[in-house]
Length: 111
Length: 116
Image (cartoon, rainbow over all chains, first blue to last red; front, side, top):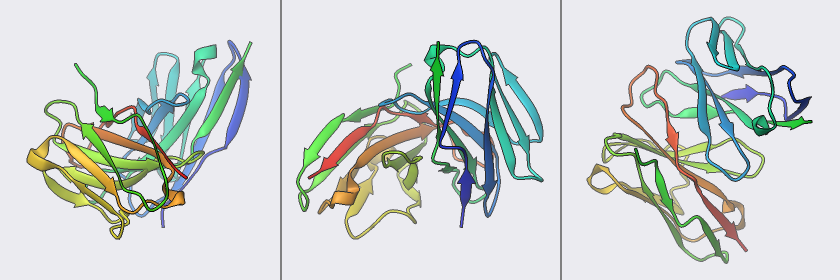
């Protein structure tokens, strides 16, 4: 079976840095995605990692270690608008590229 | 560029009734996905189309769910008859191509289904 684990909830304050971890055990691996989903809205793409290492994009960075089955999303200079659910998803190396999602981490940012 | 369109946005039905959802993907996107997202969970793939052919429907409850993508563009997802546990948000997503590399999916706003 496929298993993707991430914390259910996290809280942080404006201006702080937060790291959301994701571990995965899947039958294949063809990349790891992070999506942001505000309440009642569709998921929107944040980042993609297929090789080990850190990918930086503005205030958001994502890290991958394939040997450990581990990724994290790092959010810097938190803003109130960053309050959302963050979904970790794995693309399997099978025909078709549909994503296997974790349950999501709800981040609450307070002032 | 217009995004993925879905309708209706909300639907309330009673169990054993039928319901249909419609999706119009981003123009030129060959791959279309239907996901089911139950409250507090991540999206779960129901079916994936490449043009008008089915690539993966292994998690589609085929006794009650059906989907089609006529002419490789719009798609409809139908539930007949609905059960209480079908209450969820149904998300449609599309992507340019289905290959084994980077494949960003663009999601529509979803249809929130409540089965009473």
